Length: 240
Image (cartoon, rainbow, N blue to C red; front, side, top):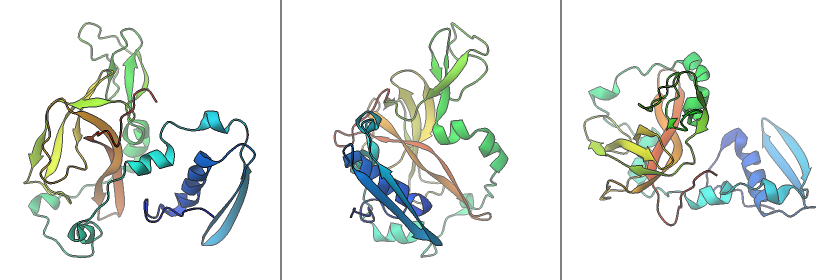
């Protein structure tokens, strides 16, 4: 019997059985047999056996590593607000209809969901987003970029600001310019900034996949990547 991860992860919906399976395989040994059962509107059961390829397939962080990075929420009022359990005043800037372009999201899914940019084959310059022309002023090669993932790259903070006028479920809204160590930069929202935290130019940052905003009229959550301070307890990754 496995820990259902409710206390440390919460409920992941339809993906939860597979989440638990990956967590179990991180601690399994070759030859172990795992029974996965998912239930909801019906029930599915899957039996898998770990092989000798398991040790080589384990990711650098895995479920256990990401759970060790978690940030517990202790503010009960914020819990009520972000789950729409109380009515809060969001201000005039929150009344804009944030229309969801699902076809646009699908066309750009690698960039938006996978944080995929480009790297020039001629000069090795990474950039986000990918474009037809290399951003390196000494190169400007055309149609020379291959896919390049920024999601696990280490970065530093170039600039930052706190916006107390725009609506944010966890005010103020922090954002700034992030410089990736291997090359490339992007203006990004900043997440998990505790009250009283002093941000500093040059401090290490890592990328996290978070809710960008919520289209209330169509009931659709938009996701994107944000930058959060990297500490010794959370660690950072390079070309993992």
